Every structure is written in structure tokens, then in C-alpha cells.
Image 1 (tube, rainbow, N blue to C red):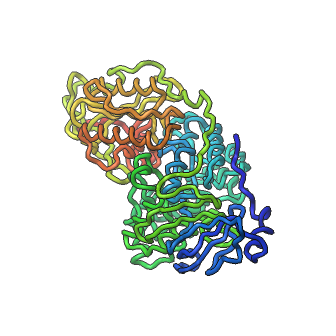
Image 2 (image 1 turned 30 degrees about the horizontal axis):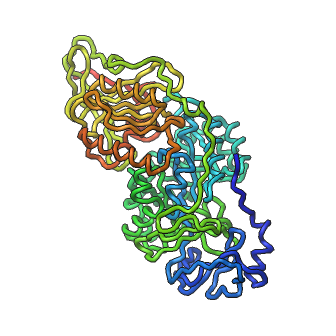
Image 3 (image 1 turned 135 degrees about the vertical axis):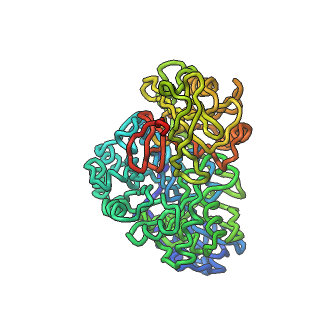
Length: 600
């Protein structure tokens, strides 16, 4: 692996000082712009930035003393000079892209720093998968920091993953150059109950002086929440309302407010700042999960900042939440997050502070994008064949694998049903009275079947249940090997034959997403790397993802970004009801429950 070398501050400090003092010329000067100073929360007109060795040497109203005959001049022409945007919490795999192609997609949107948790690939390929993500991240022309995944499985005893992460794995990863901390601690019951394994992972991270990521997906803000905070997590992105955001910052956490492809949690929480007047320094913006279509067509962190502003946030505060607040949280305030001397020269030029058009992006002193087009290469890791061959079903599936036998002598039955909630990660635990036809329980109305197909160890196991909220009609099925977090295969459908066709198709192509209707494949997104990612260009993956969205709509689904809801139906750490390879899980109690109940 060839890492991009970037000089440390001690290595270039003498030259930075010399340039700032006017003794040596800068490599580049960005001249005559409006300096967005996120330390003082000011917009200062008629300023210039002098850059050398990829870092900022000087910022002031006149940088002429830094200019020599070889200095490159970039004319800001009165535009805003904004620090490169930081995504504080995200999963690259959710973009269906490798780190290189994800970087290629987001650089033109002004994202120059990402804090990524590759726990999706950790569930499939273990520590080796994390290492490959980490290594490709370090090859990129922007800053991609990796958090070591903490929870694989996310809920021990309730799911089976391809690999398990251990405290020893965490301790080893803390020595890697690109590891910034511990990924989201999803096993919040484990922390609350002082599980030795969870506390060992947290301790290894804190001994390394790095940040522990949080994930408290419970509405309970009482003693359990206090116990979780006492356990060490320093931030949380699972808040969905103002009370969640307030509780987190009052207890010394950073409240990360997310706007992903399907998670719309900024508007309901940012009122803690805009209306309640809480100190905004402890509020941070992030995306969590963005698929390729969102990245290509709508944007990345620029989209989140625009949304925060549209929700009533002062533009300068919104920018702080996407720059300096993030850098400070991860202990990188001297490296990134602001346009000030010594920091990496990550700068955006934009003509409007509210709409935030990204007209030029400079990363580490190099122009990396201009007017929506990328101007640099994003190198690829050489992914081995074993990382591209991860879908192991054991046998070709048939309609019989998706049958749900009815209790003896019953005409109808009551079922526990997973209820999808639009634009949110939580589900609802519903009950539905369903018909029995030919000895099998059948879906009815908006209730259709869901199955989790084991794909890591070729056990041939299939867990069947019911889900509502997608609105599917006709004979169809959708299958995906993206199934947070265990990443088995999720199949949702109205017809068992179509479900078998979809599942077998993904085994054939090595993973991805497919939709069948009446025996015809309507859409296919191939994700050959770990069944999670493609190393094709983001535009190509986004085009196939759009076909997937259109196919879902053609089958009757009207939900916004319903694919994201589909992919989370096996996430057994977010209430209320989920499916795993071990059965149906009530996440309110962290217990397996029966699919069928007797009618009274």
C-alpha cells in the first residue's frame, strides 16, 4: 500500500514561520476573500491566505509579503473562504462505495475530513477488513480518519456475525497511523451493565488517548443514560428530539445531529441551539449513512450545513458545527477545522454563505475540485479475491425456504410485525392478525414477508417474519446483502418464489441489491467487495441505485429512501423490533420473541 505522505507540523514549522514573517515565499496565496473565522465566529472581508507545504502559514488583510515569483495566486474575488467541511460520524460502506470512490464523490462537495467507522466490513471480514479500509483511506488526497469498530456483533447473543471484534483487536488497531478512536459503542446495554469486554475496548482506546464514539439508541434519559455516559462514550448521534440533544450536552457529551439519506434528525434537535440558546460548541453535524445517489445528486456535508441553516441556524454557527467543533472533539483542533496558521490548508471558496455553492476546494494546499469537478486522483486499494467472495448460502434457495407454517388447527393467527418508520432508524413493534392458506401464514394488506438469510458460514439458515410500511403490491421481492450490522442477507417480498429468485441472484453476483417482480429482475446494484461496496465510479453506482429506487416505487413503495430502512431491519440495537439469524428481537427488552401468538 502506498500512503500519501503529508508533512507533520514539526517537519515544516521553520518554513511556516519564515513564510508568515515574509522571509520566504509561500507556495500558494488565496487572495482577497471573506475569511470565515470559526474560532471567533466572524466573516472578515478583504483577507488572504498564504499556504506552504500543504499548511496555512499566514492569514491577514495583506499577504503580499508572502508572495514570490513562483507563488501560485488563487483569486478569491470576494468569495467566502470557508474551512473544509468535516463529517464527524459516517460509514463509507453505506455509500455502496470504497473509500477511494467515496472520496471522489464527496470532495467536489467540500468535504475534506471524514471520521469513518467501518463496522460494516468488520462484521463480514473482521480486523482484516478494517485494515483494508484504513489503508485505502490513507491513500486519499483528503483526510479520512478511521474509528476502530467496537461492536461486532452489535448485540452478543442476539445475532451471529461473520467475525467478532475483540479487545485485543481494538488494542492493536490503536497503534495504526490512521485510527482516531473507537467506533460507536452500540452495545449500550453492555456498557450500562459494565460488560468486561466492552469496558476493555473503551479502556484500550482511552489508554491510547483517543476518542470513544457513542450510540445510545434508547429514549430513556434516566439512570441508564447516566450509566452509559459514565462508561466513557464521548458523543452520540442517535438523538431524535430536542430533549435528546439537551441531555447529551448537559452530561458532557457532544450531540451529533445527523442528516443522511434517510435520517432527518437535525430539524428536531437543533432547536436546542436556535430556540433554547444552548452553547453551540458541543453540537456537531454529521451524515451517518449516505448512499451513492444522495452523494452524487444532492451533496454531502454541504447538504447538511444548508439544511441546518434552513432550520433556522445562523450560518456561521452551522459551519462551526461542521468544522472546528468536530476537530476539537477528536483532538485535532491544531490540524484541521479552521483557516488559521499551522493547520492543514483545507479551504472552500463559495459565493453564498446560505446556499453554499462549492466553487473550489483546496485540500492540504492542493486544488482538488473546481465547479463540481474533481481535479485529483483517488487511488484504489488492491482488494483480494477473498474479499470479493463473501456470499455463502450453502444451497440454492427455493420458495419452501420462506414458508411460515401455521399452528395446528388455526384459521388465523396474530403475528409480531416490524413496522417501518419513514426517515427514521427506529421501527415500531406492531401486531397483525393474518390469514392462513394451505397451512401457511400469509401476509395481508401492507404486511409482507421478511427473511434473514445466513450468508457468512453457508449454514443454509433462513429466519422468516413479517414487516409493514413498504406498501409493496403484486408478486415481488427485494434482497440485499447490506443488512446492518451483521450483514447477512435481508429479503423482503410479497411472493416466496420471487424471494428465492432475488436471494439466489445475489449469491451469483457476490452481493448487492436486487429487485424481482413476476420473475423479472427490475434492478441490480452489484456490491462485490464484502457484499457491501463497489469500486466502480460513484456516478455508475448512483445510476444503478436510482434504478433500484425506481423499481421499489414501481412495486408500490412510496417511502423516502426506503432502501435505507430495508438495510436496517436487522440492526438489533435500535428499537423497537428487528430480525436476526437467531429470530425476532424485541430491542426494548433485548430478548428474542415468538413470531406468532395465539389469538385470544
